[in-house]
Image (cartoon, rainbow, N blue to C red; front, top):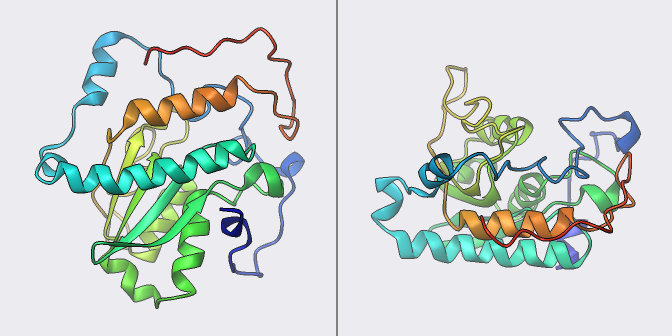
Length: 224
């Protein structure tokens, strides 16, 4: 999966270094930076409930999310924040992306941006209107806005992003009134698996974080 780290992109964007980035773009050394998971049994049970729209074709949605989970596993194995996604056009995965913020020290290289970059190397932007995104973690505000501007058809995600989520957890960028047409978003597909991937990452030492912290005494919490 190393090829995912070298996808074509827009060279007009500067390479931002992590020490110049605000926390909402680069905060990968906090075990809660992607999803808060210990806020009460009732709240967690609600998060596990899938939308009726997802339940209509659950096997299909789980199949595509499983592919995103597999890419996230590759990211974790490479020392990267385990967030990943796939883009699905006409029932087929046509692009993949994993977070690349640690390796590149560029806080804008989120999984969604890399997947879109690969997609645009094969198809015109207009095809995104027929394309669905499956991502292991709810898109952040930055990515949610980009997805809306690109015209994504629908977003399915695993666990919520309680600190930076742009699809309802913090801001509903996907559906708020705006110039661009919004898109529907559904969460909870393999939510627990997505959370466990993040936990496995955040108990590790992360030398690329702005303020690395010793984590020798941390233990993996097996219960979600």
